[in-house]
Structure formats: C-alpha cells, structure tokens
Length: 142
Image 1 (spheres, rainbow, N blue to C red):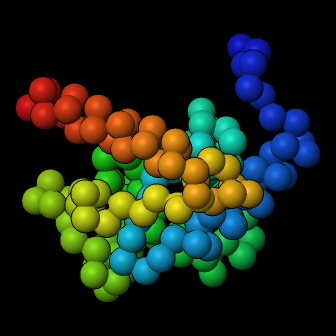
Image 2: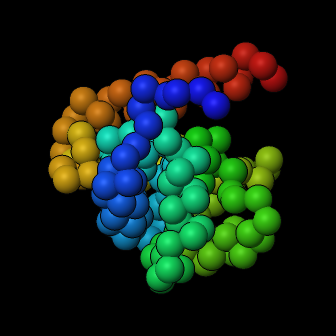
C-alpha cells in the first residue's frame, strides 16, 4: 500500500466527517454542490470519495440534504434512483444527458476558504476556473 502524504489521523478523520456534515447541512434547496468542493472546503481536496463514504455511512446523515451532492459533472450517485426525484422536486433541472445543469444549480459557499469559514473569494474563483476547465475538456472530447 502506498504511503500518501495527505493521510488522515483518526482525529483528522473525525473532524473531516463533522465538517462534511456541517457543509452539507448548508446546501440550500434547489442547489447542488460536488463531493470535491466539499472535500476542499473541509481542507482535504484529494478526499472527495471520503465525502461520499461519510454521507453513506454516518448514522443520522439521512436527515441531511445528501441528495444535493453530485459529482463534478452533475451525475447523481449510482444506485440511488430517488436522488434525481428529490432534486427535481426542489426544481433542479437536468440536461438531456441526465446530468444536473450545474451552470444553473451549482452552490458555492459564500465563505469558502475552509469549513470553518464556509466567504473567501479566492476559493470561489479557483473552483469556477476548475469548472470551466472541466467543461472545456468535455467540449473538446465530444
């Protein structure tokens, strides 16, 4: 097994989980955000998969708006068909390819440098650049 330089201690993992749940609780109705964005806000940008695991395996997480978390392309969670229904009930629109219309519904925290400060414009601008790059790559590959 590789030794990753950004491995979490047990205490860091516990704090990460609390941050994830706190961030998800703030996603407004009719908006979505990404696993990667939540991981970045929580201070661990390379741990987007751990966001999904946290939401799936934390007791009580089902009371949070977990359905508002999608991947960076706007795809819903595999195996959770109800997620799309829940989002549509909130007015979230989907494109013809079945992905959430991220341009219309993406939520970025107003205080976004960290989970403690969910209003730094730098994080917002970095994430906007990231989304433009992803969209550019997707357009090039079509």
